[in-house]
Every structure is written in C-alpha cells, then in structure tokens.
Length: 548
Image 1 (tube, rainbow, N blue to C red):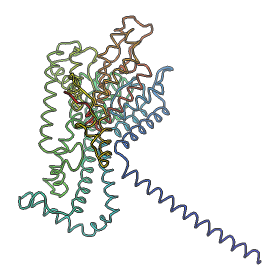
Image 2: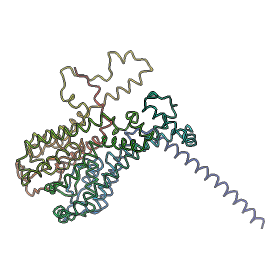
Image 3: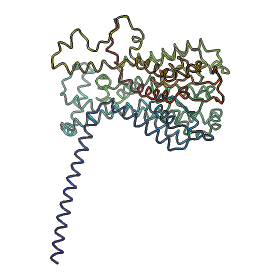
Image 4: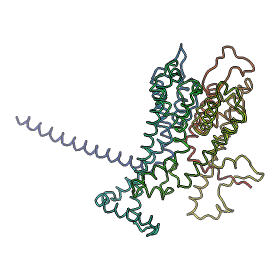
C-alpha cells in the first residue's frame, strides 16, 4: 500500500514536471513564432515577398495541373516544362503559350482561372494594401495606440471630421495641427477603406462581366455553338474569359484565341470595357469611386485619400488631374492605333469576310488589347510588319525613359556616383549611403534587360534561325520577348507553310511562337515573364549611365 501511494506521488511529480516543461516549450515556440511572424511582416522587403509569392504560386499551379488529367487525343500530353511555362504565364498574366489551350480539361481550366485571379494586378495590389494596413496595426499595437483610440473613437472621429470640413470651407490651413498619432491613425483607417473599395470594385466588375457574357451566350446561338463544338463548359468559359480579360491575362479556352468569335461584334464590345477597367483605366475608375463615396457619404477617410494620394503610396491611386489626363491619353493612343490599323489593314486578308461595322469593332478590339491583355481576332503573322512595330511600341509604353536608352551618345559613361570626387571626399558617415547609391546604380534599365533577353534567345535559337529564317526572324523574336516582358501575350505563332525546307510531319498548331523554341529558350522566357511582372520595382533603373 505504501509502495502504491509512493508510486502515485512519484507519477504526479513526474506528470507535473512534464506538463511544466511542455508549457515552457509551448510558450517558447509561441514566442519564437510571434517574433518570426513580426519579422516577416515588418522587416521583409515587398519586392522579396512578391518574388516568393509568384514563384510559389507558379510552382503550386504547375503541381496541380500535373496531377490533373488533360483532355488530349491519343498519347500526346504537355510536358512538365510546358506545364510550368503555362503556370508561370498564367500567374504573371502574360498568356504566352507553348501548348494548345484545348488540351486542358475543364478542371484544369478552373485551376488556370484561379491562378489568373490570384496573379492579376488589381488582386495583388489589394493584398498589398491589406498587408500595409496589417503592418501599421502591429506598429500601433506595439506603441499601445490602437487601444487608447478605440476607447474614444467617437470623439476623435468628430474632431477629425470637423477639422477636415474646416479645410474644405477654407476656415483652417491644410496643415491642421493634428498630433502625429492622429494622422497616423487616420492613414491607417484610410488604407483600410481603400482596400475595401478595391475589393468591392474587383468583385462587382467581374460579377457583372460574367453575367453579361452569360446572357450574350444564352441569346446568341452562333457563339454558343462554338463552345458546344469544342466541348467547353459554358459556365467555365464565362468565368474564365471574364477573369482573364479583367486580370489583363489574355488566355482564351479556345485554340484560336478570339479568332473564332471575330464575327460576334457584341461579344467583343462586352470585353472591351473589361479590358480597360482592369488595366489602363483602373486608377481613374478607382478615383471616381472614391469621389462618389465622398459625395454621398462624407467621411474623413475619403477626404484624406482624395487629398493625399502620394502619401498613401498606392500605385493606382492618382491625383484628380492625373486621372483625367490618363483617360485622355488612353483614348488618344487607342484612336491613333485605330486610324493607322484601319489605313493599313482594312482591305487585308486578315479581315476577310467581315462587314464594315464588324471590321471597325474588330480593329478597336485589337487596338485596346495591344497595351496589356493580348487577346486577338487576327493571326498576327498575317498583318503588315509596320503594324507589328506599332504594337511593339505600344507594349514598350510602360518602360520608363525607354526612349532615352535607344540612343547612346559618343561620350556615354557609367557613373555610379554623381559628382566629381564624391567618393574620395566622403566621410565615414556617408559611405553607407554612397554604397547604397552604387547598388541602385548597378541596376540596369528595363530596356537593357529586354535587349539582353533578346540577344540570349537569339543565341539559344541560332540554329533554327539559320534553318527556318522566315519563322525564326529577329522581328518575331523581338515581338515574343517584348510581349512576355510587357505581360501582353501577343505572338506571331509558327506556320509550317513558311518553312524554306519543308519538314516531314509538320502540323499546324494553335499555340504561341515560343512553343517551337528549345527548352533553353522556354526557360529564358519564363525568367522574362517574372522580370516583366515585377518591373514596377525597377522604374528608376539605369541611373548609373551618364549620357553626354
């Protein structure tokens, strides 16, 4: 009996000791995870986060696509490299293809739709806003500021509204004497509101797009017959084409892209607003939404967003004048393209069989797609080379100061640090700052990267350029690389009819020109698409070059 009670006490002490150790281990792990999470959220560079995001999402998408069975005929199926290429092209919204789209099953098309949605600029920018707000929340909590504000939230909100109303009436100066805490908390709430507006914009536009496409296909039998003949699910197609168009990706579930719908002018007119609302006109529409909210429901947050666009640091939130000029610029560029395209291609074979109104709408659709989305109703290899050059110019529109880099004067030099003798006379306190400037100066301009990629691909495909010069022309390679870097998706394709030495067994395939490249060329183009998707972090590259 004594031994039994003694054993029980020993077991109790042992259990208590183990529980104490487990609790200590739990608290240690919790503290470590908390510190690691705080480090990731507060210290990690946004560029590195996006690189990790796109690479991880591309790899995950490739794995899922590989696990699902494709819809293929015979023994043909996409290779692992083709699946990874397709996944990267989808996540980076580049719509470059090395396999025909009708190879993918309905389930795979749903996966591609989700990847396009997660990789779209509007969605990723919205995630960035919420991440910034979460960082600010952690900082406010660290300084014990959020708790104190929540207790007297109503009083501070009234004071802020009164002060902002005073600014609007001219009763107080713009530099109203709020404490740094008040401004910081107002910025925190404003970013939260902006994230909610972007989310609402994202959902409403795409829901309306799916509804309009579904209604059109429900009433127009010719468009519905195309899907039936190709074995495509109507709902999957509606969601796929809406997400792809709004996310400015350009993928279409049909092999021929939008060529099979070239006679469906109303369908093209439905897609044109989706293209503009998800790309070039998104900043202007976002500003208009904030203005409407401010007019019908005056809030301190909307006033702050409309008056302090630069302080918010959101790329797509522009000042009022800039937004209006953006609309004029977008419409002007589309108009210029429309006039040139109509003058050169109106009577060409590319638009054969179309009436005047169908030609006009088709050309408008093609011009709207040239800057971002990349959907096409014509075979780009059949249009005039001058038009390809115009499209290349439009795809280059986002390369900051790209025109300056196309000409190198005779006294061009590489000057990492501005000023004569700045490094030699620099004090110890300025050396770290100078080293940071040198690192920034070593980053090349965007056009320099494009030139390097074009030269590299010309090297990897040099044998095919000799044997098949009409298909593997320098212009076709330039169009493919710039289209991938601009995340547009235009391609000249590949034609067996253009072979100087006809290849036995060559069959026409409806995929991009890159589908005929070597594996090395495809890998380089994958890198190009990643570079292009992250090019917003290199808008000031090439500062180390001094042009004299």
